Each structure stands twice: as structure tokens, then as C-alpha cells.
Length: 191
Length: 217
Image (cartoon, rainbow over the protein chains, first blue to last red):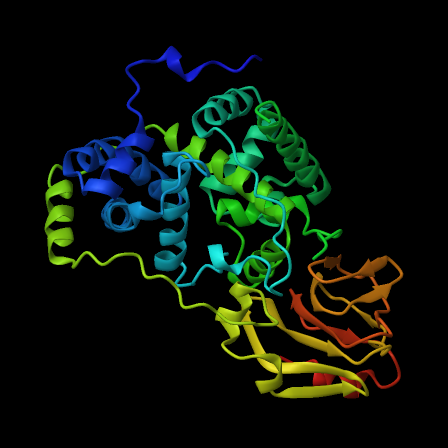
């Protein structure tokens, strides 16, 4: 499927611009717009992952506080607004619900031996990539979409998906790898 | 620095990006990312996938008062600029591991398993998984052992070989349950690895009962 230009939908608010406005000017109108869009989705994400209504809203508050406080770390050349907010939501949930600290790579962690710089990280035009990815995810065969959703929405590692669905681990891996291959091609098209 | 040739399994990167991977295994993946631009790119892609899945979830309305409560909390929070982490200085450990351990190898206590092979007294465990460091003197061999569950090694210094390949700094060696392997450290220097297991190892040789004491976590 050909990628759609994101200009197809002129009414879609540009969340990246809103985040940058929050970072630069502490723009509370922009923040409200981000809240209105993302808070109900973050809540849905937390509910899928097992939080009850009030716990989910607590987590929504946590995530949106982090969005306000850390907006200066958002880099639109590395991630879309929803990707960036997704990573915050994922990490806050792990910290709060599992009481674990998620081991994360930080920007100054690269080249730990002080050696030469590694090749530059993959950069992409976030909005275009998102629309290509959306098309790829929407067109995945059901069994591939199923394992992907279980991984993201139900906190299941691939071995648990195998046990839960009663399908052999090898089959789960094959489905995930096929889905990953399709996702990778969505990025390849933009390179 | 060369780019790693052996990577964590793709499913593991997915589990890491999706947030379902548990802390011990996540530590190894995060530490590998410090060495590996290829896997960093893959994780960034899988996080973009998470972003799309989040954006496409059917929204669930939040309480009318939630935004107001949030703004009250934010007003009470002193806005501090993102702290710039102090330069870490030279460390043998990749950042995620350095933060988890809080010390350099020479400051750690080590337990000898066989001559030339040591395990760190430092370790973390959660559920059935555990991690510690494995240090091998040049040319030393880890005794044959069988796995009751999976095992992964991330090389952080030197290198080792076994029947499956040769592993250098940044590489991840993965062994499924029940895969015997015989690791031999490279002859030209000490080898230091992060070892992650999902169950304790069981040694199979005649001295197994003794060695198993050293491998008890």
C-alpha cells in the first residue's frame, strides 16, 4: 500500500507542535489540547493492561505530569508525539504497577568505552512513518496482529503468549517475526 | 568500536519495546543497546509501533475533574529543568548496568567457580530470572553445564568462543533450555560478561555438586 501523505487530514492537530510549545513556552493551552487527546487513550491503555478506573486515572495524571515536566526532552526528529508519550506511559506503568525500575538507555550511554561514535541512529519523519505503520498494522493477518496486540496491550512476553493461546512457542516466534518484518519494511520505505 | 554481530532475539526486542519484558532480561537488552545502533533502531521502530497502537486505542473518557487536579498538582511542583546527568567518566560497564551495579568490576567481590572463572557476588533476581557477572581469565574454560532454562551472555570486555560462535564486546550469546555449550575465553585477555539466566544452572560433571554451590544465587 502506498503511504498516504499526512496532509490528507488537515483537521488533525499537530501534536508535535503542541509538545514543542509546551517545552518552549510552558503553553498551557497546548497542554490542554494534548491532554484532551491523549488522556483518554492513556486511560484506555492502562485499563487494557489491568488497571481499574481510578488506578488508570492516577497513571494518566502521572504520565501527563511527566509530559509537562519533561517536554524539553522531546525531539521530533527521533519520535512522534504519540511514540514519545507511549514510552512514558509504558515506563510509568512498569514503575508503578510492577514496582520495578525499567532499565533504560540514556543519551550519554552510547559508546561506553569512549571509542569512536557509532553510526547515527535511525532517524525518520515521524508523522509519515506513523501513517505507514498504521497501514501495515491494519493489514496484518489476524494471527500476527493478535500476537502484537498481546505483547503491547496485555503485558505478555512471547513465552506467555504461547502458553495463553495454546500455540507452540515456535509458532508465536514465527508470527512475531513475520509481523516485525512487515513493520520494518514500513520504515524502509521512508529511508 | 565495531558493531555487534550477535543480537538478542527479535522477540526479546519486541518484549522490551512493548514493556512486557521483565527487569532482569531488560537489563541485558538495555545494556546491549548501548553497543548496538542496529538494535537501537529496531527498538525505536517498535516504540513507534507502540505509539500508533496507543493513538488508535478507542478513547476512554476521563473524569471531568482530572485536568484540574493535574494542574493543581503541577502548580505545586517546582518546575526544575531536566537535570543534566554528571559525566559518567570512563566505565567498563554500559550505562544501564553501571546504574544497576553502582561500582566498577575491581570494586566488586568475586566468587571463584573453577580456576580462572569467577562470578560476581553482585546479582539481581526477579521471579525465576537472575543476573550476575561472569569473569573469565584468558583462555579459561567454563565447565560443561546443562541448562534447566534459558541463558544469555552479554560480552563487555574481551571475548569468548563456543561451539556456536565467537563473541566480542557488545555481542549477546543466547542458549535455549537444554543446550550444552563449552565457553572458552579468548587467549589474549580477560573476558567479562553479564550473565542472565531464567533458572539456576545445574552442572553435570563429576564435581557438579561442588560447582553448583558456586552457582547458587
